[in-house]
Length: 243
Image 1 (cartoon, one colour):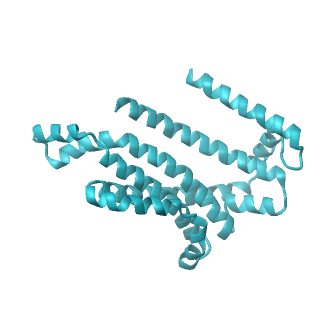
Image 2 (tube, rainbow, N blue to C red):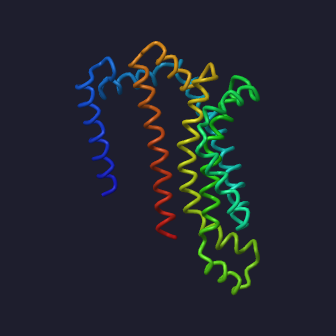
């Protein structure tokens, strides 16, 4: 049923895309078939793969940093009710700040290149992961904790058997949100301050109004993000159903 629903959704999106192309024409949009052909041609181009590797490497580093720092902040603050109450409004305020305004500071600190786009990608993912992890710990049913005390569990055993399983579903939800935002931040970093990567290619295509390249790159990025998000969403639903 889920596979059929997913296929139906894809068909609806492609049909809407085709209809919109008929309305606006080739100047603003390419058809799904033409875009798919250009995406395949792009994948067959040897010059494309160094840019892809650059983006994937920068994104992987940024996402790892975002998860590590975000989980550390969220779990640490969530363990203390007072610290969580004080920090949550601050984290929400930071989350609402447009990260583009911080990019000049990032460039001054890290310079143009890989470190800057990794840092810019990471700052997009740290805060949402922190917020979800913080709330995951704070929202654990007190009955679970009292049960651990009644069973005389050690802190390590209670963490492994109670805290982590109870908090994991919401933590995975935060990681899923952080994944999308980190990817966006990495691509923006490549557009503003890099000489390689898919974001740089996309900016060059936009500058030249190369609609074929714009649509092909966008399609590849959407497919990548959709596949990973689908896997994370499946894990998320599985964990929530078990919880």
